[in-house]
Amino acid sequence: MPILVEIRWPINPFRGDKFAEGWLPIAEAALDYGASSWAFYRALDGRLDFIQHATFPSKADFERYWYSETVAEARTELAGCYQVPLLPTFWEITGSGAATARTA
Image (cartoon, rainbow, N blue to C red; front, side):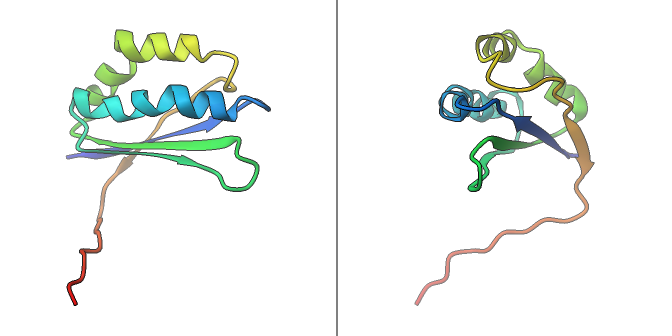
């Protein structure tokens, strides 16, 4: 059963832009580790809160991504930008949907 993983990233002051630029390609890299979707959100107010979502086939697939050399190096490189500890949360997907483009 696929799972949604959510990671809330609280960013330290004056480091939001650096974090956004550095983490965006890493969030997208979830696709390289089996994720079927990913998203990376930034709060409009304050600009220091980020949320990362990814849908993986299993928790083990997420862990393969999270503990990979690429992701571990990126977390180390961006250390000081975000507050620790980071606690991913895992969600069972009980329903989802998306709007389709309408034709006139």
